[in-house]
Image 1 (tube, rainbow, N blue to C red):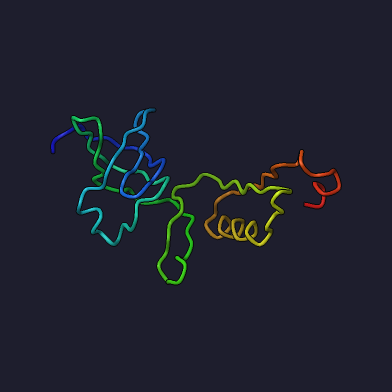
Image 2 (spheres, rainbow, N blue to C red):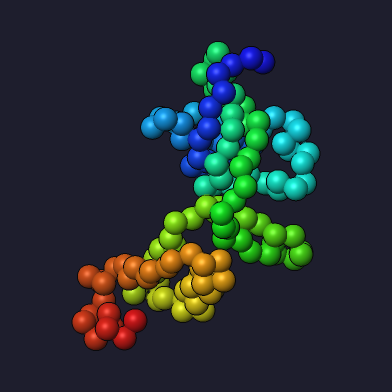
Length: 140
């Protein structure tokens, strides 16, 4: 497997497939075997900056993961293992509906606490204000 070396940012993960932004375009990639086995890296997450090798068929193989500047993570349900949701975030936008469904403020609080704990600037976006009455929108 000899191809062109490149560096990019993971845009999406789905199963064992990774969409990586490289030079303004996107490339479908998989993980090289040794990356899968390296427990110090953990799972590759959206936002990770990765080193990769472009293959002749137009796909790529992730060969390395650069250190993260920060991460947004949570504990996996029923376990102690960490699940990284996003890495290298510039800011966190917490989007919630004012109505239909009603806002879950405890979830909004969790996102804001995660951002604060990881020194990630955060802001709140109130959505669906057109569906709420003026008083309901102000109370939310």
